Image 1 (cartoon, rainbow, N blue to C red):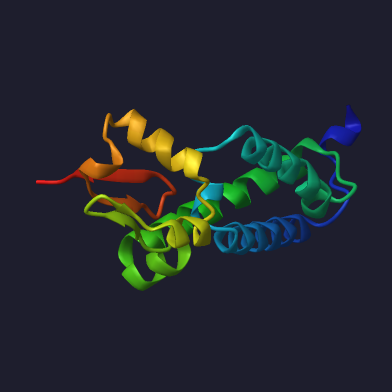
Image 2: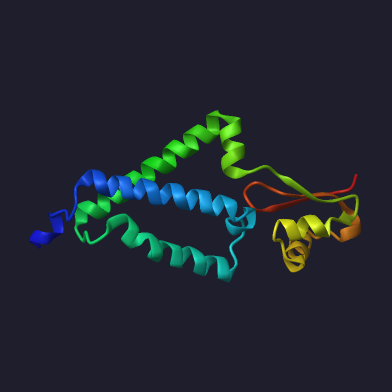
Length: 156
């Protein structure tokens, strides 16, 4: 019970480790594309779970204390709040962080090269069409949103 409150390293080091891991994951997930965080497939969910496990040691090292874990959680939540606050107030920051919407179909024509570039399997696009009860010929425009979801508008 005594070890529960004893930090294995200084609190500032735990906070710095958490901040570095947060920043690196943010950059890597942003570079991996919109679909990583859009509608999670089973494979994406596995990656998220494994990422959490993989970065654990990077953030807390050998620290097994309750206080150390709480410091890391507090830093991660604070960083998340700061990033969201900045994105809500500075459009260039939001675009750099979240990306911009991408047109993937217009007037019944699906841009397969854009789908490939955005790592959208044809089946995922077809599922989005079915979800909205729209056929390819009825597409006015289809957009891959910055969130990773697909929005489809009918013609007319």
